[in-house]
Length: 89
Image 1 (cartoon, rainbow, N blue to C red):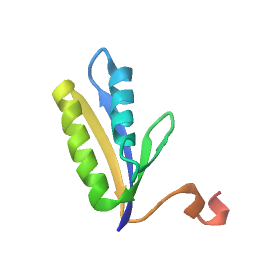
Image 2: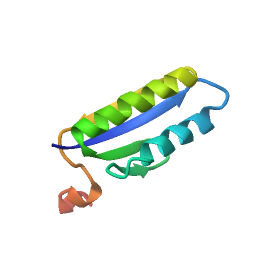
Image 3: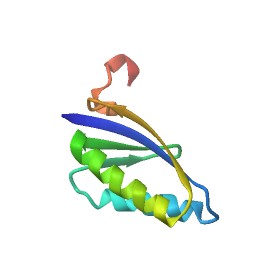
Image 4: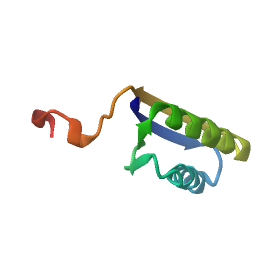
């Protein structure tokens, strides 16, 4: 099943920007996940099980590096801009 995850990371350390960038770069290493970044959040697109496995591993790694909070929205479909109804584009 294809899924979409919108994720925001709030690193609670002085190196917050570096920690967020590091997290995104680690997720991007998996070429089976499409990653789109904007100023407020990051969207991930791919197979549900793969997304959940990668997020489980990478969020744990972030927690081990310091305090952080993650906010996630998960949809059981691909919610890309291209798939929106024309009236919303």
